[in-house]
Image (tube, rainbow, N blue to C red; front, side, top):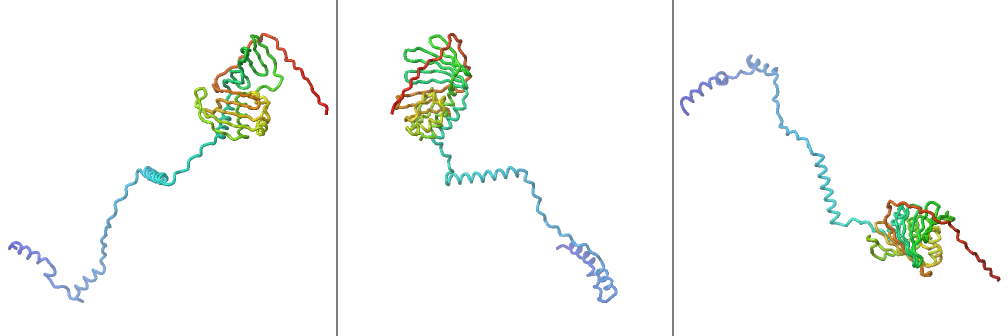
Length: 302
């Protein structure tokens, strides 16, 4: 330490009151004055500042975060489900249900074109609602046509057209008749899936229904004759009947009705569903003559 530093310490020491004078004697006037002042002086306590944690910033993307968290949880749940027991799958519809669905859809069709083959006779026609027109070809008879519009029937044969009023129940709509025949058959017979085939370029499923002699009575008796007439089944009661149906796009594309006991088969195809069809009536060129029937009554004596 230098002499200069010693001099500075000596000067500072002289300012220390303890070094300059002795402490007051207890009980003296100076002691009591200092004590009284100390007892009455108000002091402000030192404020201790606590270190506060910085305020949290608001979560601006809380919605997105929650969504992401939920999505992650869902993904985990799906992963667990996939890795665990597989979720149940929808059961495929039965053949009966598929056929009934096609029947219901076909019944809603308002217009269509059709072909029909019965033995040596071929038919090609179109229908709109209750009205229809068809051309038929028979063995050696040439072509003839029939148009039904309202309650009028127009028959054209050998170049002559006649018209007459329907005397009995007119034929029901073609699509409705086919649909009801299928419904009745499904209700009274098991449905067999035969296979996959093509009908007029459409991939179709082939179904078969077999009605025994006893069940054909139950099934066919539910249908009116003006619907059975389309399939020549109005006289098939009590006979075994086989009905084949081809379905494409939930629509009946082909039907085939077979009555082995009568050596009879009728096959129809449907196409151009809901096409813009107009049934036109031909010009009448001849007078209609009502067919005459001779009725013979036979009696048996017991």
